Amino acid sequence: MLRSTLLAASRSGAIRKLVESTPLTRPVVKRFIAGDDVDGAVATTGEVLADGRLVTLDHLGEDTRDAAQATATVDAYLELLGRLRDAGYADRAEVSVKLSAVGQFLPLDGEKVALENARRICSAAEAAGTTVTLDMEDHTTTDSTLSILWELRVDFPWVGAVLQAYLKRTEQDCRDLAHAGSRVRLCKGAYQEPASVAYQDKSEVDLSYVRCLKVLMKGEGYPMVASHDPRLIAIAADLAAGRGKDSYEFQMLYGIRPEEQKRLAAEGNRMRVYVPYGDEWYGYFMRRLAERPANVAFLLRSLVTK
Ligand code: FAD
Image (cartoon, rainbow, N blue to C red; front, side, top):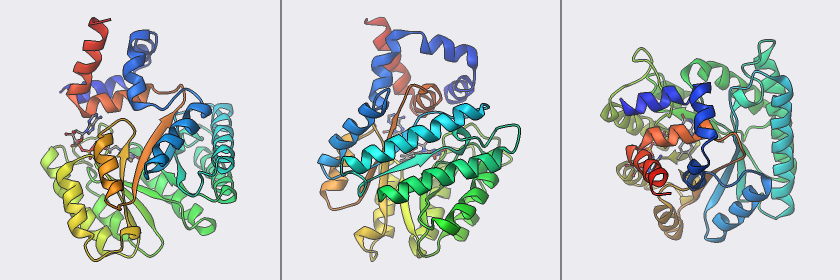
């Protein structure tokens, strides 16, 4: 109930204005977001890399209906990639891109614009010596995002995909993507989805996650296990027995279970942290609140104790 209320609020312009205009939310936002600008993003990247973790950076923003805004997002990624290269981080830090932030929802030729914009980001990533992963958004975008992925992979075979275990289609998508050279991030899924397309019970989502993991771990691709769930992490480690430690990786979000992130890295695992930055934090932040009621309590406590 709380989850669906928060996810509905994540799409509400009025609640967005209210939350963004309350300065007291800032300390809580800071727990999950690396900073407002590229300087903060690069500084945080340096800190995370220092203890052996890897990074994927997300320039926050989504659902743009404005072509100029989509171009500004591409420019922000190009600047970021240049900064990662100059800092010597590009061998360990890549970028994650939401296609809806680079034009997928534009009324005129949205998919075409998003493809061209994503191509520019991929070219810059290749020049910098790193990679790109396409984040996955709600189920209405899955087909479009996967078709753009296939197009990009013609020129940039290293572009990573994201699949969401809560979608009933995902086991088949895992089979389609579990081939040599294919980088696939498997997550549970963060959006509010109808029962016609997505499992609604947490236990059903977890079972689907394990089925999908089995397909990816048996396949010849590069699985990226994105979860903070201790049971799923243990199952992934078991399923990976026999694979080289450099043939898959764990992934977690910035600000969530950092000690576990460090432990996994210290044990010789590839452990990548998803680091979001920028001032368009509202949607991302609300999805993090929705995942864990304790985060809402943390936010409320910080509001009343100030
Ligand atoms: P849960 O069952 O939600 O959590 C397991 C445990 O992890 C909790 O008990 C708690 O201890 C901890 N935890 C989980 N979430 C939080 C939180 N917000 N705050 C504090 N503790 C928490 N989703 C998409 O739909 N598209 C994407 O492209 C996408 N990319 C992602 C990339 C990465 C690297 C990661 C880690 C997640 C991504 N997600 C994405 C989000 C994902 O779908 C889940 O919503 C999120 O990871 C929570 O699921 P979980 O597997 O951690 O399990």
